[in-house]
Image (cartoon, rainbow over all chains, first blue to last red; front, side, top):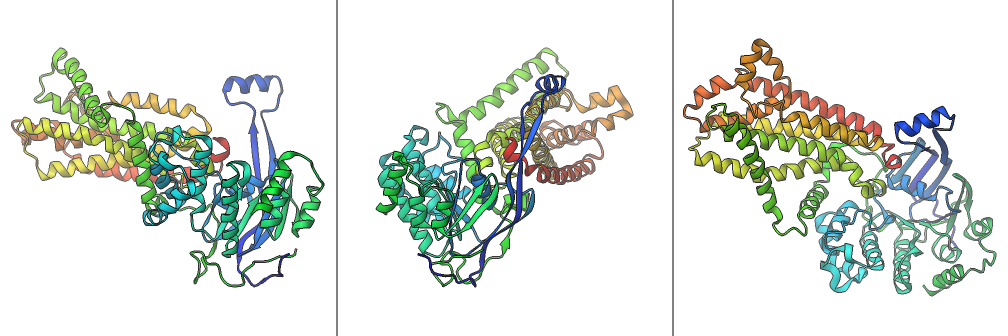
Length: 266
Length: 302
């Protein structure tokens, strides 16, 4: 389905030999620690969330990032987004990064939807003028109606999520990250999001899409990366990637079925 | 590795249309400078804190007038009425101290807790984390305003004659506390992520501040009791800041400001003030350095 590349397109994300290690600490207080030390138990344990991952993404590519739970997908997104730094290796990005990742984080429950839109937009790097310009679009996308001026603490979880999405999706960026987009929202909203993501992709921005749904990955992406226990296990064609993960076998659960159908809808 | 490709051959239509931005590490920040660069976000964060603090309260911002007024009334009763020391306009002497000490303890205390309190943002958003202690300091500064309004009102009622030197002293005192409060908040906010004990350490430290400054007693008392050693008392930057503020407000309300200044202020008041400000700036630089070193582990330790 994909056309061969303009491999002359500039690099958008360059990940070179990146590792990230996490330390799990079992005890926090001095009492627990000394008890554990006396008993000879482990005080902490480290594991590699990402293990020497390397790849290059060029501007305009849309990447599906797949892998089982705990394979390091979210950690990789956090590194690309600049929330964390790699312990070793280098990770470089070009231009502004935004996307549907941790949407609604930092919403203040006591403030109104309107105030939170401005605050969240500023957190995502938008200026005041930019927010004002896009404000009506954001409100329309969020579709919270007359609740715009009531505290977001009173919102239903769907409304809360929609508001977060609406702000995030309106940030201009060169790299767009999307983490588990289909996990929240009702069907019409999911459809709206997917349409929006297709627009993002077609506008030549780099798309980085994390999903467990082979249907939507097939629709959205032209390259798949598969992480397995922190290592990059597969990098290449979409259909092959899905086969590699054995996600193409009929799983038979309702959710998968729905999700594929969802992809077809768009 | 095959690279499969972009649907569009042309350049991106994003903001990076004509000129390509460089490839950079996304997590690179320039620390406090970055906070200054994103002052629009800083302003919103400060506003969020302020409007959230009095949300749902009937008296709203009026509380930040009531609280210092009550604090003053309590101290005044105990120190000036019960333990009368015979200091001229003691209420002003006391209140200047209360206002500035409160600014310091708030910046330091709230700043230390700021990173942990804004967990959701820190863990999930690419925001310069120095933003939070700085915002705490500004919120505290905002709450100094009602105290200053009350103070100015009292001073004028007592026939205050403001003078330029005094104003300079006041500004220097404020700058000193703002820089020092931010520096310590930066240092301790990062440490607090690793061991929440630090917020208790800070609480304990700030308890000393009421008694370690010439507020409920005059600086002359220290000179009287300790003679030459009194100069070491002013190693404490907070004591120096309180004196600077008293030079700004209190001395001007007394019958003979020049005599009061000569009697109750050290000769090298300004010199000491600038030295302290310099030291505070160094502490700020150290705080930034430590913060940057610890920052990498902050998201996972929260």
